[in-house]
Image (cartoon, rainbow, N blue to C red; front, side, top):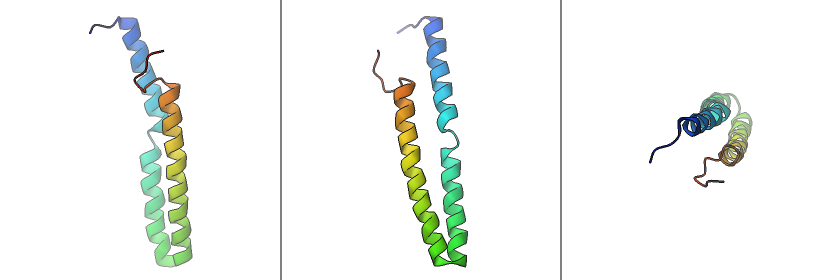
Amino acid sequence: MALHHELMRQYEQRHEEFYQTIKNDPLRSVLIYAIAIVGIQINSWLGALLILLGNIFHFIAYLRLSRSVTLYHLNGKDE
């Protein structure tokens, strides 16, 4: 299927904006859990708190991902 070059440019721009929105989430997640591993060596309550914060972050990141898919129309539905 051939697409007009302007449509293709818009499509690529949406994907780039989507990527920029979510690109740091995996790094933040790994960082939170790495800090939790160190924190649990210091204090078990601190480690448990950091694990809880990691879970909360995952929930927020999932909501951001879901909202971004809808916002940038990447869900496969044409409008």
